[in-house]
Image (cartoon, rainbow, N blue to C red; front, side, top):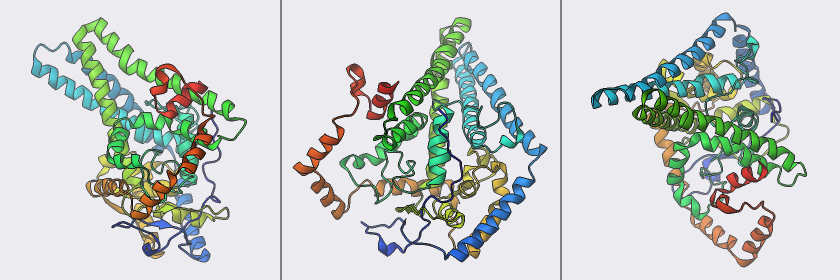
Length: 442
């Protein structure tokens, strides 16, 4: 299950910058990069400064950082216990006003707990940010978070693929999550007309998209490999086992227990609170992730350079990421992914230090004439929605290319390619292809 190559592979992809005039466009330009941004001497000097900053922070880690993450873990645990008690108690309230007030309080607290579990605790612990503590469960190999995606699948698609091949079309599968078109480098298809609608469904069920994300990646990456079944089977089984545990806990066991102890109304308040909290967590996580990667000036890459230096890798992380301005509570609830630039530069640095080093990173960017993309949450989110809407419509050239792809010869080739796809009969045939693949191999 843990097919996890090293987190840092500097020699992975080209770090590039070209003028916007190189990019065909409909009305508005989004940067696509193909040429080197900094001379090698400059990128090496940048790497030296960033490496020094990284070593300074990592050498200072100690008991204060350990106490911090343990407090976060305790907050997640106790807030979940209290919130679930409130949701069950809501069903016993004598008045409708009391029921609604208690349910809202319980649901809000459970949403907070799940967001904190997902962002500041789970995401950061599973990045290995606290492995130096040698804690029995707050480490990247043992910890698993409160969503339907198993930790090993997420670590492969995110820790390795995304952080190594950041924003390279065809290598970083987080570029659109196989569902949303966000760059000219993704060929337009008629389904892209529903970009905004697809985005809404992706946001509402983000944990489910993340869960099947690595299944889709593995099916694509190993399609021609004789080891495909051996790779897909344990991943698919692990996925469905985790899904069963999460669905069983939130939607069956806890509502049933509340119903048996306190009555039918408590079962319904528990179930509805769990559903609402999961949706709230999904929406928040989606917004933070997309605002960190798909704002107007987040750069997309098209080429792979096997000789990429660490300095060029650093430049690619800076240009491909966006920060979100906010207060301390806001940064906590984002898991400090509101400092997405700092996170992409140093994924295994405890995220609580990102705010501390952000001014230094910004100064380094200014020194090397690199953009440091940051803005308020509302501004970044509007840019994300604008980008998604922009790429839902084809240019004239894209429309002509699509028509050409629909020629008899092209459609025949597509049929030949898909004739060996695993077949699922019965109700399974109505599921999306990635789910059918997971069921087939499970």
